[in-house]
Structures are given as structure tokens and as C-alpha cells.
Length: 232
Image 1 (cartoon, rainbow, N blue to C red):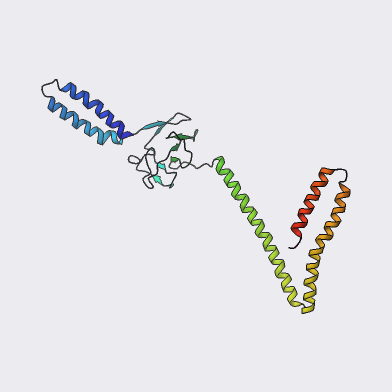
Image 2 (tube, helix red, strand yellow; image 1 turned 60 degrees about the vertical axis):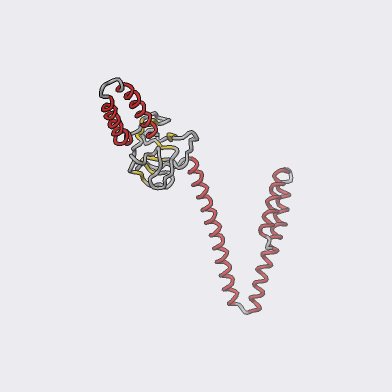
């Protein structure tokens, strides 16, 4: 964009200048001097000039030669004359579509394209990274999954430890006693669920006989519990 504007400036000066100088006796020399001057301005002055943008939120000026961090590769761009944030990253060559305003009282995104992409925005080097609401929700989801995984692992560790203790206890018993103990434990686990189910079923029917909705919910939960606890 800067190169295109510079070309327009050069043409806007050179063409009228040539028309004006053509009426003078030494127009060839004057046109040559004009061209040389514009050449110097184009490649050594205007090409490296700073472009100023204005934040969409606070409307404060932002210089495009501000050292910036790429939102794609997260590397710093310090050669901002060649690689301003309105262009491409000097490392990954990606083009950011927004710049995070570096003013302390703002911090909003200044969009550089019409699609207003919020991801992978450029930001001033040294600016603190603030998590947005989407990132907060994602972090909470990850923490929830991590806690659920830790709880499941703790439950499995407990069952594994109980299994090992039972296995060691059975090893110390005579073969017939070990078989008897194993049978009694399985029997108690298998039939104990049914015994508790029958007992609790009577209690629920008696306790909630005048509340059909609560009775239905209690019975539903009791049946689900029985299926979950009954050995397959």
C-alpha cells in the first residue's frame, strides 16, 4: 500500500512538473533534476516513512514501525521498516489482520482488513497477554476434564489396591478357604445389591406414596444404581 501511494505521489508531481518545465528553455535539465529528486524521495525517504493508523476504539495514533509480535508464530519483529505489522511477519510471512492497541487505557483490536478476524492478531512487543472470555471458557473446560481424569484415576487406584490386598490375603489361606472366601465375597457383592435394592424399594414406596413425581424420580435413580452396581 505504501509503495502504491508513493507511485501516485511521484506521478502526481512528475507529470505536472514536466508539463510546466516544457515551456522553459532548459526544460530537459529541469526534468532530469526533477526525476532525480523524485527518485531519491521514492527510494530513500518515502519508502521508509512511518505510516500512522488510528485505533478503532480510542482513536489514538499508532505508528506502523512499532516493534510487534506475530500472532501466528509469536516471534518478535524488530525490522519494522521492512516488516511493519500492516505487512507480513519477517519470520513466518503471515499477514496479521488486526493489531492490539498498545495504549494502557484501551487494549482493543484495530482491524486491518474488512473481515475483522480476531485470531492471531499482532501486538506490541512487551504488551501483557490478556485471556479473552473464549480462552477463559476453554481453560475452565480443560481444568474440568483434568479433575475428572484425576478423580477417575484415583478411583481406579483404589480399586487396584483393594484387588491387590485381596489377592495377597487369598494367597495366605489354604486352597479350600481361599475358594470359600472368594465365593462369599462374590456372593455378597452379587446378592447384596439385590437385598439392598428390595429394602430401599419398600422404603421409597412408603416414604413417597403421596408424591408421585418424587416417587418416580427416586425409583428411576434406584434402578440406575442397581444396574451400575450389579456385576456383569
